[in-house]
Length: 407
Image 1 (cartoon, rainbow, N blue to C red):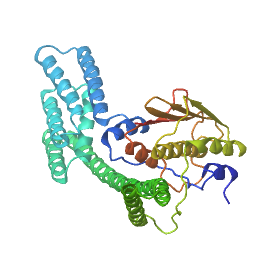
Image 2: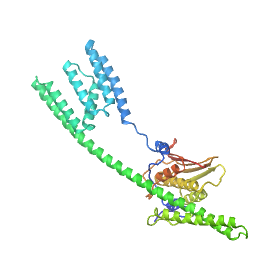
Image 3: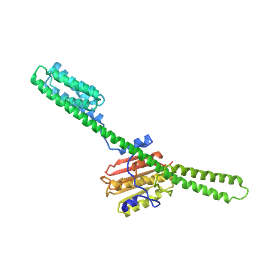
Image 4: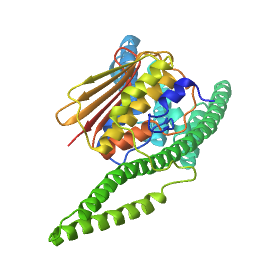
C-alpha cells in the first residue's frame, strides 16, 4: 500500500497522478542545450586532460634536461625529444597508431645516440604505447607491435645479456598491451551497449510522455470546446424569429465543434493504452496549495511562496506548471530524504517562473517511480518554448527552475 506521503504527492484533488522519474532528450535543440547543460554533472574532457598532461610533461621534461648537464648537440637533441614526446600525448587519441609508432622510433633513436631520456619522456612513451594498444584498429595494432618488437631487439643484437633483458621486457610489454586491448575493448563494448540501452529508454520515455501530454491537453481542450458547443446550442435555441443568419452561424459552430470533439477523441484514442485514465478535469496552479498541504499533513516539510498577481493563464501552461511542481516535489521526496523543500511561484508580466529547491544531501530513491520525471518536464517546457535548469544549488541540495512564457 502506498504511504500517506506518496498519496499526497501522487495527485491533485481532481484525480490521482502517477509518479514520474527520469530524463530525456528534447526535440527543441536550443531548449535542450539550456536544460542539459546544467542538469548533467560536470565532467572533464579527456582530450583536454591529455593536453594538460602533455603540458605538464613538457615542463617537467625540460626542467630535467636542464639539470642533466648536456651541452651542444646532445642538449638540442634532448630538448627536441622532450618536446616531441610530450606533444604526442596531446594528440594520441586522434592519431593513436602514428603516435605509438613514432614515439617508439624516437625512443630507439635516442638510445642509439646514447642519450638518457628524461623521466617525463618515459611517461610520454608509456602513454603512446597505451594509445597504440587501446585506441587503434587491429591492423594498426599489429603494425605497432611489430615495430616495437623489431626496434627493441635490433638495438641489442650485439650483446647477449642485453638481448635477453630487452627480449624479456619486450615480451612482457606486448603481453600487457594485448591484455589492455582486450580488457578495455570489452569495457568499451559494455559501455556502448549500456549507452544504447539508455538512449532507447530515453526515447521510449519521450514517446510515452508526449502521449501523456497529448491526452492531458486533449482533456483540457475538449472541456473548453464542449463549453463552446453547449453555449452555441443553447443560444441558438433561444434566438427570436427573424435572426436566421445568426441561427445559421451558431448551428455551424455547434456542428463543427461536435465534429472536432469526435475527431479529437479518435486521435487521442490511438494514444491511450490499456488502463489509461478516462477523461477528467486537469489540475492547474489553483491545485498547488492543496498538493503542498497534503505533503505537510503527511509530515513532509514544504514551504510555498507565490509572488506577483495571480491571474488565469492558458490551460496548457497551467497544467504544465502544476506537473513541474508535482515532479519537483516527487524528486525531493525520493532523493532528498527529510530535507526542507521550498516551492516558489512568480507571476511575471510575460512569464511564469517556477523553482523547487531542497537542502538535502541526495540519496538513492527510496520510493519507486513509474513515470519519466525530468523527461516529462523537458517535453512540457520545450512545448511552450520555455527554459529549464536542474542541478546542485549554490548552498547544496537540488534546484529545479523553469521559465514558461505566458504569451
